Amino acid sequence: MRKTILITGASSGFGTAAARRFAQGGWQLILTGRRIDRLKLLQEELRATTTSILALDVRHREAVSEALGSLEPDVLLNNAGLALGLEPAWATDPQDWETMVDTNVKGVMYCTRAVLPGMVARNRGHVVNIGSTAGSWPYPGGNVYGATKAFVEQFSRNLRADLLGTRVRVSYLAPGMAQTEFSAVRFKGDAERAGLVYAGAAALQAEDIAEIVYFVTNLPGHVNVNALEVMSIDQSWGHLAVHRRNDAPTP
Image (cartoon, rainbow, N blue to C red; front, side, top):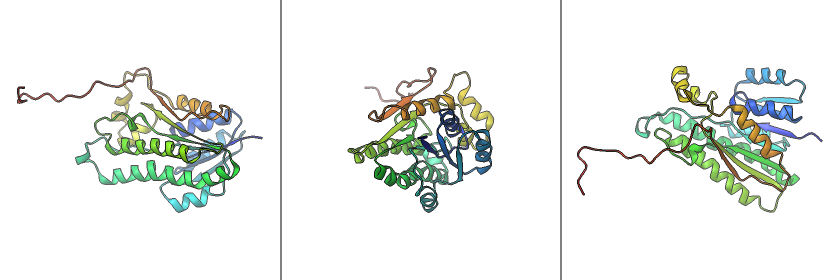
C-alpha cells in the first residue's frame, strides 16, 4: 500500500524538495501552500505520482481544520514557516513578529491538531516538524524567529510525551544555514542582501533536508528520531560575544 505525505509550505524550499524526494520514493503527495500557481507547476512536474494540491494559509485555524481534518496522511511535514527582518528587538516591525508567530507557531499547532486525532485513531503516523538551529543558538536579530523555533522544538517533545503508548512518531529537525528563498523572504526581496548570507560558504541545500526527512520517515516503525540538528560543514557555533568598552571599570 502506497503511503501518503502531507507537506505544508510545499511551494518552495524544503517543501518543494521534499515533494520531489517522496515522489521519487513512490509516495502519494498532498501539497499545500499559499502560492497555488507554484503548486500547479509542481503537480504537473510530478504527474507520474498521485499528487493533490491545496491552497492553504496555515495561519487560519478554521481553514486548516476544514482542509486537513478529513485527510489521512501517513506523514505530516510541518514545513511552512518564515523569518522576517534582522533588526534588534527594539527596532523591529511588530507586524513581522505577529506574522512569524502566526505562521511558525500557530500554523504548526493548527496543522498538527487537524490530523493528529486520525493518526491516533489509526494508531500509526508520523509528524515531522521543521525547526531551526536558531531555536537553540541565538544570534543578534533572531529574537522572535528564534523563539518561534524554540517553541516548535518543545512542542515536538511534548507531543512525544502525549503519544507514548501509541505508534505515532514525532520528529524535530533543526537545519542551520540553508540556501533557499529563506533570506530573500527575511529581507523582503532584497536579493543582494540575501546573497551575502551565503557568500563564500557551502550552505545546506533544500535537497539535503529533503533527504534527511525521507530517511527519518522511512526507518522501521519502532524507531523514533526525536530531534536532529544539521549544519553545513562551513557553519558552526561562534565564540561567546563580549562587548569591550574603553570606560570599563578596573577590577
